[in-house]
Image (cartoon, rainbow, N blue to C red; front, side):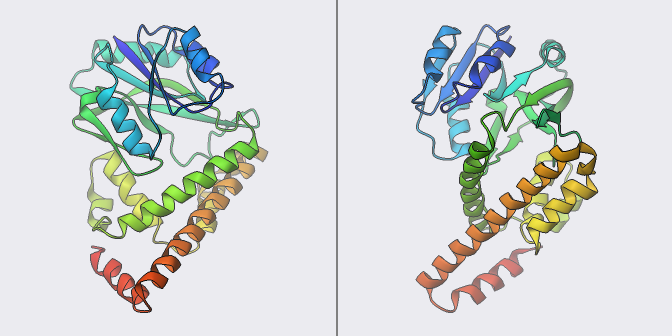
Length: 291
């Protein structure tokens, strides 16, 4: 009753345990971005079906997968190679699709791990839409995509375990260097349209809409890297996660600063291309669009 969608790119280290955690499904799809390691061999050995596409950005890539992969079952669970479905979550997933009520998607709680410790307090958010009817969901944003669900969203128990540092700190930093470029592009693109609304931030009932507006407000704040550190380490009590909490909050503030620098860099390039009046005109446009 449940198909599995796994996104991969050179995931030979993490994929075996991920596949083991979903082997109860009769329809596992590995959606690969032309891996050059043993990822595809491991997928074949596990009996997974493979689709390949060159990666462009997260939302377009994921949306293509939902629209073009021939899922056998009406429900799909999306998972990354560095994530694991716990036995408790598996039970909840199966119960949810047997009796979904009016829900067309479900949120699950993810546990992120660093230095062998669950970042119980340090995570910015732990709720993600991962179980859904594929025809009722789409993704938006170049990176860290937001799930847009056409219908009612429920919530199920159990944990999805995530090991973002499984390949080491160097890999995490390199990956987030790439992510920060996408984030900077997304921020600049959003400022070209009417995207932030204080009214929607306060009154929106939809979780995804509120999260979207929260991001847009956050991207307009000064000293964002420092704010991000204080939010994770102090406001969310990341200090209770010990050395792992301090490390994670510091890394996230560095990531935020990378985004700030790249936004500034894109702005400088556009200023040079468009002339000296560009900055003032853009500032006026952005201010006039914020409701």
